[in-house]
Length: 387
Image (cartoon, rainbow, N blue to C red):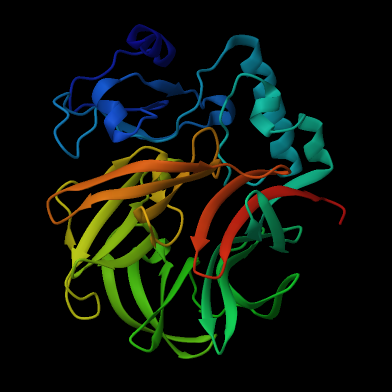
């Protein structure tokens, strides 16, 4: 396998601690699997000049928190004529406007690459929309529109009604946060841009604490994770405290466990898939008054499967469940529910308990938020270009 990797890269692998740029080495494995299997794949993204990423080899000692390679984006290797047709399809879709934020895995066939025959994209465009799980395997659409991304739904009860906060991003613009009241058949009383900012906003993680409504949104462009307090529902908020700063943090999740507050977050890196390939953990006695300390095992999860948060952590009969994203093959391929087995200041252990794939008619799902009354998701599906 290593001989194949080196021949594909056209260079020898560096020594431990070395770096190289270009195609990306990826261990698409969980922590436990990595201990027993160091097999790797190559991302061959040299079509249209799409080079990306810095790869650092790590110590093979596999001490806690260490992995042999930085994980970026796992895909199958480039394969002869199949890669030619995949590249041709990619060029066509680039011209007609396939969303630019979607990674381009080179799979075994052109149909694998785009999910449907490539010409389907001449008539349809993929868009993220909001949906509600009403029974196992059945989702009811809540909000979807051509030319607009709706994603990251979080629900909160206010005045006896269930409200949904979500990311709204018209094509070509930065994302902002909106809200709507959940009613039969969809969302009503929509309020746009509830948290006005000059930079991109997503992931409106809203929750009640001691009588106040709080939000922990994604604000990676500002290189911070901040707590906002609602002063007038739903569209007036004040920034109360910055919890983390100095990095492009993504999808923060905060929850209380055994007299400590725990903060999971992913961190963006220099390449296209690096915002989804790791989870970092911090803890504090009181997020509203005391600083957070990094967990000694950071990053506590590595790989585009089972690392990046996909929703609030929730409690079940099995224990605490952490929803995570499956970004293998393409962004938003599925959800992986991970049970937290052990969590303290020196150790963190979790295991996969369930995998959730998008329902028929959709090709992506990357948010799973469950409360006592509702389960909300976002789904990637096709919308007519002429609607």
